[in-house]
Length: 567
Image (cartoon, rainbow, N blue to C red; front, side):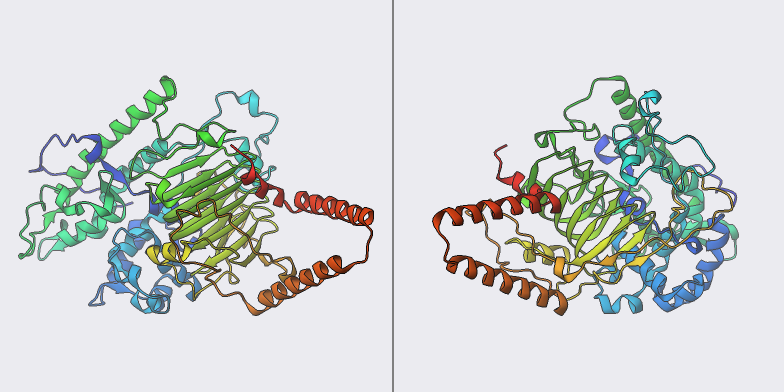
């Protein structure tokens, strides 16, 4: 690692203490949705590797890196280069960046801004926070495997057993993760600034300066206050650029001065979040605390986090049906955690969504414009309209997808199936348009499988064990494909115009669907016209009900009846 930039005497306020609403925060999105388990993107010494790469790629007058150039520079495949560009686009801080606004066919040629790309590659060395130790180790001794050379790689437990034995109450909270990300930024800030800075002509490498434009790219990793990129530009939060004349180029600032000022702000934020963690650990759970786990059984306990910056949590729904519309959600990010044997409908436009640790459930996500991550789930049917989806460490799940990018499959997966999107609700197309999902592009059947080992996992991986490609997903048999009907609970309030599935069905699935509908019609006709006496009709009706009930339980569709029960 290169030597850190020596801090200099800063002309900024020596006491940058801010109110909680204007504290510096790490942007969660790059750390939660922007890490790729591709070994060639992960550098032991990021500065040593990325400095010559930056110099090599900086020759372009536009300072943008297209797919072909990226593949050649990193020695990766064209598929992986496109994946990098798509991933960068999904976590960018600027909605006006050409990569974000580009049509799918133009992404390869538009490319990524070099500075955003360098920051993206740098954080590929980030290690996720380890789960907390369970306070009662004896309570999990019967489910947690004994220590072995293969800890962190091939667990003796299934993905869901792993989650249940270390549930969210003992997993890192949002505050824990924020503290971990702040500590990472604190440690690596000097190197990150050196990669964004330029030497002063004639004064050597030790005299690095940062332009206002270069400083703005730090918005990829940090933000001030709760509004993030939707609020004041990052440079307006800094004393050295705040009053710059918009008609005049701002004077570059010594990188050491920026480093000193940011370190002070990070220290203030760490102090604030550490106090928050300490207060929670030492005090009773607060009903308004967005990081406190919800009750494990009652959907009535589900709540949205009060912060506009933090995600909304839906957690612990069990043997129930749960519905949220756009008017119910004040956040653009959502996490569905530890829900079991339930049906969950999120009929709203979102930017990011995470489904974690769920089992025997059906989960419908309306329209997600940036990224969805589904992790540690078993026997879950997931119905998603989204720009992109990443599936990690799941078993026996079926994904009904309307996705503009190839589904990404990573980790230890087993018996996954993918199928085309199979539902609609009245405002679906309106929500898709709002978040930028195209119904004419559906890559559901082109999953891209990466490695089984996650290099961003803090657990050590066994020495000498080489990575293998993750088990990919198979296509659902067209004869098993059925439409999923979303009940219209709010008929009087509905103003949407969507009357059918906006994603065209592939011919094989459409033909099978039409054949099944025709067969059903013929069976109904035969039953209506059958010359049976009344007692025989009753016997036939009873037999049909028995078979239907058996099918409901065998297929898991019994869960859909929860929504007919009164809460």
